[in-house]
Amino acid sequence: MSADLERQRALLAWFAEAQRTMPWRHPRPGPHPRPYAVLVSELMLQQTRVDAVIEPFARWMRRFPDFASLAAAPVDAAVEAWAGLGYYRRARALHAAARRVVEEHGGVLPQDADALAALPGVGPYTVGALRSIAFDRPAALVDGNVARVLARWHASEGDEASLRKRAWRDAEAELAAEDAPARGAPSQWSQALMELGATVCKPGEPDCAGCPVHAGCRAAALGVAATIPPPRKRAPVRDVFAAALVIVAQRDGRPHVWLRKQPEHGRWAGLWQPPLFEAQSTEAALSAAQAFAADAGLHLVARGEVEHVLTHRRYRVSVLAATVELPPRSVDAEPTRWSPLAEIRGRGDGVSRLGVRVVDAATSSGSSS
DNA sequence: AATCCGGGGCA
DNA sequence: TGCCCAGGATT
Image 1 (tube, protein in one colour):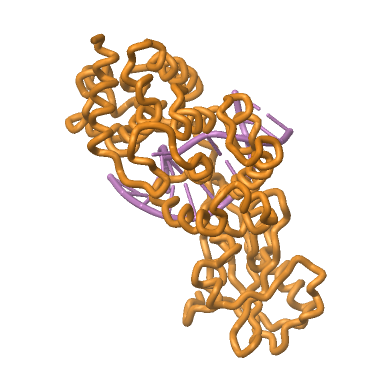
Image 2 (image 1 turned 180 degrees about the vertical axis):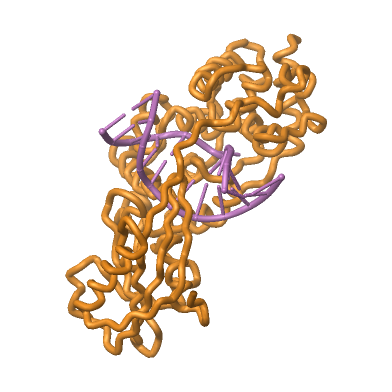
């Protein structure tokens, strides 16, 4: 057996022993009994760590157990069930994909690569993941883990974009030989590559001493594994100054918070959060919030600051609170609602993480600064 | 090719 | 603090 195929055999043997348990993972080789679960998990896992997905996945599967139930639900229900996971466009994509599967494929996920790629939210990586993991077909796949693993195996050099292209060629080459162990277990192979990247061949500090394919790794032999791939160029994080207005009213004997629904596009699309006034400075943001409050006859109290960091933005939010006697039930024509404070604090169904943090800051005792 | 889109965990 | 994560869509 060639060195490359021996490396495959070693990795597959390691994976059979060392793989982590995941709610969506089918431990046995072969096709997955539930392609829908694979699609849900793959969309949730895009740019998201395994640990962060486990609970949301379980909740989602209880609420939308199959393509039919998801397709029948309003898109807002899907977005709100996604709350806390981030990248909320994925929820709309998954919902649209389910409707398409029901309408165009009889409720059965297609196996054809082109049909899969036509589904919203399904790009090159996810096509490979579905074809290999759901259907056990020999399809290549490259995510951040696989790109790093393959770059180290081959000691590839170059910028991020060229390494990605190289990784796709290398990943497909692994599946080319008729007698390749990877071809014999495509689902296990795809998952093994990613598992190795996530748990052993980690960014920054690879555990080469504990690596099952150390012998077949050129970067390890050269002692350069830790420097591959090179650091990525990153856009700077820009500050966004904002003021949040947390309006509390008693309803049915319990405190409720006034929430506004975000537009369907942009950040936190379709989610709920207290009104946020963005401006060029904290002072300008506070002025905007106070102008709004003056119109409504509200008496504002400063309740501190919240710093919320996204990939390319750092929100510096001044939190203002106001208590009103009677909620204005008549403004329901607007996309607003009153939500029980306890519910928002619990998990905030349909509320952005920033919204939850702002409400916490406004209503927890003695948080003023 | 750049930019946008969340949130969290970890050194 | 910086880095990265089972990426994709848009421009």
